[in-house]
Length: 563
Image (spheres, rainbow, N blue to C red):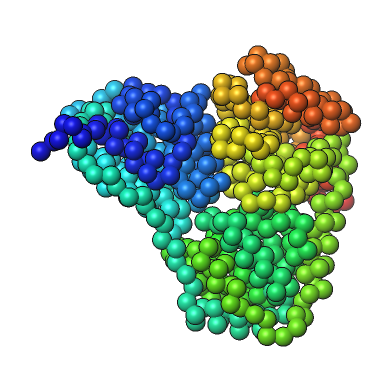
């Protein structure tokens, strides 16, 4: 029987459960399909960020999940709201990020009639989520919210979509407070560690590659101690560079897009590779060429939290089912059996990395993006959080910026455009006293640039840098490689981005020479407002060390064949 004195609406129970599970921030675009939840937010200690488009709200939630290891949460309305948000769900899926999206649904009595904005969410999101589920009764809110947190956090983390019928949210129920969900951490067995120790003792050219999610600062520190004891070179996977300090003498660089050729050669020459926490997907495996699927040419040790991943593409010689936290903690028991024979090779790997990333490469035009990255890495605080989306401009970030702190790079491994602004908004909400940078291409920025207004609304002093070359540069580069000289659908006509910032109530400045960047950046910071630094980049400056015209000339020579 309902106890009226202790009853709450299902929406209130839902919000209370989020708070019990440690959720402090939610991101939303309001919709009439979840008005009960919006009302419940008013009386509860949870910070709500109202966004300008559901894709931005979902990306903000994904960014929180990526940075904290706990599910980021967003609320969107049914139909168009849900489909707008699908880009963020796809990022969370490919990036193995814990995230929960709650989406409004039509009343239960009209389901299946294609009512106004009705969608079959399991059909729409089933291939992109770990779980898509509907709460069909108010009494089941605790059960299904607990299941959602469990699915988002367990094994390989990922996104969950929970459907909320509008009428269900207004039902009143009397329910006891439910405990928060606690993620299960799997640890390596003694046999696994003994086998790993034996492989290390026999190795002549070992290499560690860190990737994936479920890491903590403590786990990263344990891996660093392990690398120091064994003199191991450590590389990071695509967009996982903050897992290891770039200036640590054991750091060898990142195995991602346009990596250091010397590092790729080192990976191919290694006789023992420890892949810890990551999946070794298409980009870090360089198009699945570093190992030959399904078996490896060298000894591969794969440490991962989800056992179904073992042998999915690359068959490991030793598979260790463990989360990064438990595996890293267990590493403290391992000790080298003899003096390392690869100490100098590790030092060489770090020297190669420093040489590759130290000096910006020349490029066409008056603004050198490599020089901008070098200036930033040398002048911003080491705990700065850098957020970016996708585009050729990111190649300069990967090569010349050096990440020193855990979770200081928030970017999609799925290479989704439009991510830099939403991620920066989310990070500034989480860390109001840290510098947050959003670095974007011109086409990239305008995919979610409207959420610059969100930064202004909440007084978030993010510094946004837009590298404007007037084109969809990545596609133009590939276009010139395959169809040289035949430009189609890649040119852009852009606004004055500095004026765009001012129109929203922020600070804007345009930079047309590299030498002017430092003063412009410092002025943006000093404004204490959301700001845009608009960099005018020559369209020929397409990637570090290689211009667009050079790519075109190479393609034309290939087409012409031997002289």
